[in-house]
Length: 215
Image 1 (spheres, rainbow, N blue to C red):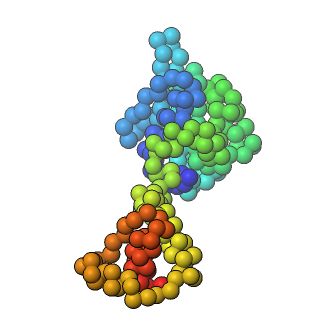
Image 2 (spheres, helix red, strand yellow; image 1 turned 45 degrees about the vertical axis):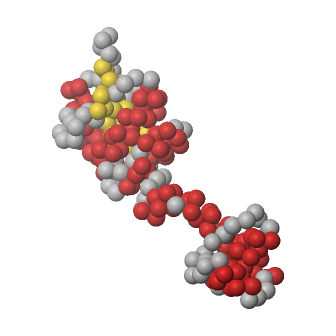
Image 3 (cartoon, rainbow, N blue to C red; image 1 turned 30 degrees about the vertical axis):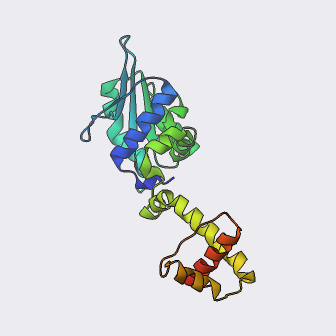
């Protein structure tokens, strides 16, 4: 998996699927743009309000994320006054970093465990194979992976045939009979394969095939 391939909105969609499973609620996802401190939200008829902030800051790093959270996001959270505030990020979170954010965002962050770093996000992803399949950019890093997946059966059959030829060619003796058979049957220059495996007819066709294809 490669989270670096995700856009900011891709990461929000990924977090929506993960936290819906973890929290057991349906989360609201908003269009890209100014979010007022809210990327994902759950509001119940009883007044419960869960706000999740998604920060895809792999290139910026932990120190910049903490500075941004304290300077920019904390005032927004105080205005929102959620009953629970969760941060999902793609930076590596240390114990001091979590403790600093937890202390600063009380009473909205209920526990340091509600501050997710990249290792915890990755762990959540691995626990939900259906989410991995849904978010193709997590694992489809280039077209070669897709080509290999689509052509898997062809590769397997080709490799099997190549191994079979390598094993059989050691005992193969070229004669004129395959060419005579091909000429009489008007098979030349096309290639045909018939008969049961290792039958007399198949041996002839196998010799034709190997002779035409080369050793």
